[in-house]
Image 1 (cartoon, chains in turn yellow, orange, green, purple):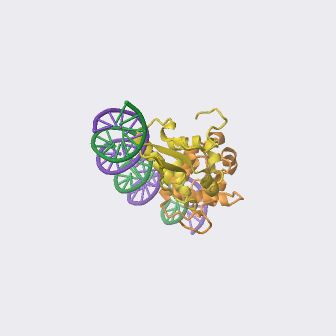
Image 2: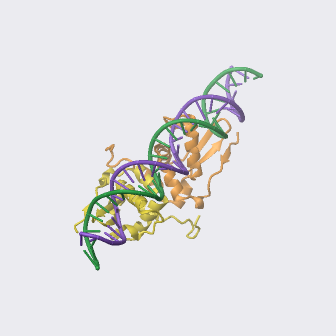
Image 3: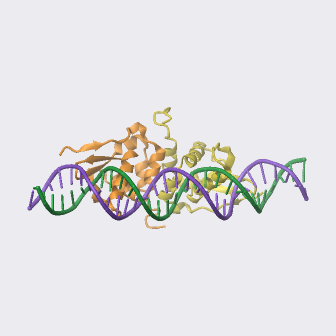
Length: 111
Length: 111
DNA sequence: CTTCAGGTACGATTCAAGTCGTACCTGAAG
DNA sequence: CTTCAGGTACGACTTGAATCGTACCTGAAG
């Protein structure tokens, strides 16, 4: 029940290259955009993001995000929780999360 | 003498995924960091960045940066000029260039 | 003209990353 | 106990990206 928090890098150890590489993928960026949009920063389930990829690949992506220091993964054994590390990101790279909200140019153009 | 400006995307067409992918590479990011640090935004030569890679690879990297909309390349035939598209970047992704200056964590810790 | 340095074009190589198939683990619910 | 859904581990495949070798182009300087 107590769920172990899987380990990620310290806030000061976040690397910009690793972060950019993590955010370069469309799927991972969509996850981060959703997380950044929710100001309450509540814990979410892995499958609450509608990712059009297999669960093995989802596992891979969430691991990349965690190892980049962008999210926390809480392991409950047979299920997993995801939480945005907003404070750490804002401390290390202020403005990054805001940037994720600027996806659409004018506001409507899809591409 | 007049140097043609090689074509890149419009300011509104800058794509965050493309930009992050461009900035994920250490060499390209070092170029962008240098450019962002120079507030005068003067035109620079390609070899003014001390990149430890062959010239063919440099050509490749500068092309990626241009196609991402981050720099302008001015072709003089036998030499090339590089200029940061600061205004367009600031307009489309405000805070991004500032982020590039936050490379070192505390100020000294290398990792 | 020739020479030379800066750049590009094309292809080959190498390596990292995204993806999924198969098998297995974990905890909750019957 | 068994069943089942969520997740992981490992391996294989595939694609894209970084790199460089060779050859060629361009403009300036002799």
